[in-house]
Image (cartoon, rainbow over all chains, first blue to last red; front, side, top):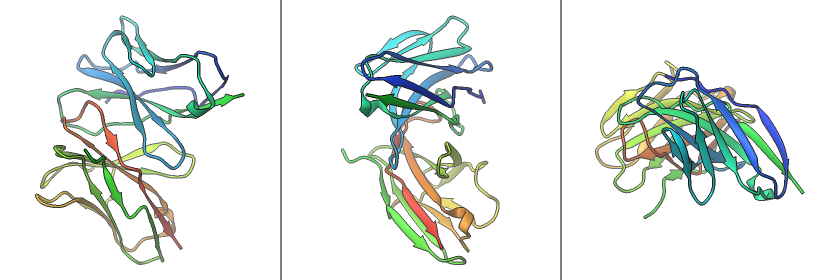
Length: 111
Length: 114
């Protein structure tokens, strides 16, 4: 199972773009990269998932270089409500197995 | 379509008692995962179940902990003879797919052992 490494914490200000990078050097061919967001006292919530290049939805963008050994979650124009822990997750699509969460990145958005 | 339902949301037990946590997955989901989260820490995988089968319990302590997902009814995480170190938030997630794709999490059950 691919192990992920991401910064423990990040600080930002309202209106800024935030980029959180996750390293997954041992990612396998069939692995997908998924990001989750967790607010205090709540369960994690799916943000975005990708396999390669770039994926964008209404919440975030996910950039994955050609070697897929890392990925970057991009949050445009963050607000105070984006303060949360963000988890990078590598999962093998279509096959059985546990899904391993990393330690997450605690993002603090300041006014 | 209701989300993943966990109950109880809060449970207080004294040392030595049993704790039972229940999880009803989203409609149509047959894959259930249980995670434990200690205060200020990340999610730790415990067990992955499908209907009537335990697929992966590599994250579950060998003693006192058990899980099931019967053909009918919710998934149950059972902790026998609880100790203070069992105090944590226990999250259940369900998925329509095997081992991948989006996980839908419940709001968690917070166990406090006195």
